[in-house]
Length: 71
Image (cartoon, rainbow, N blue to C red; front, side, top):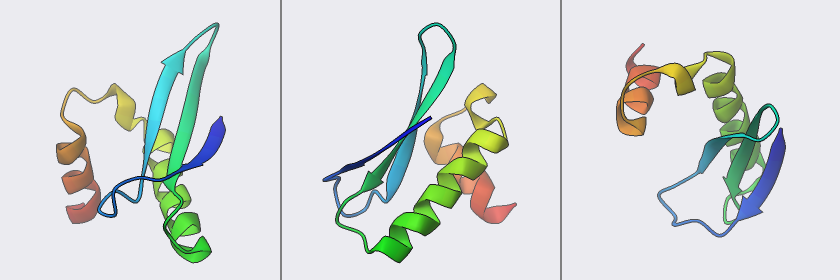
């Protein structure tokens, strides 16, 4: 797993990208404009997506986020 900071639009706290090279790999991108505390909270949120196997779901990222916040 990789973690990077990037200047993202203010409404995007972070995201996770799954790639397949020789094996499955995840890159968590955190918004560099956030405070350290917000970055840590976002990092944990993205780890939850990985741990819950959200990348195997056949639905949009918006639907996945909606399910996370109402479930």
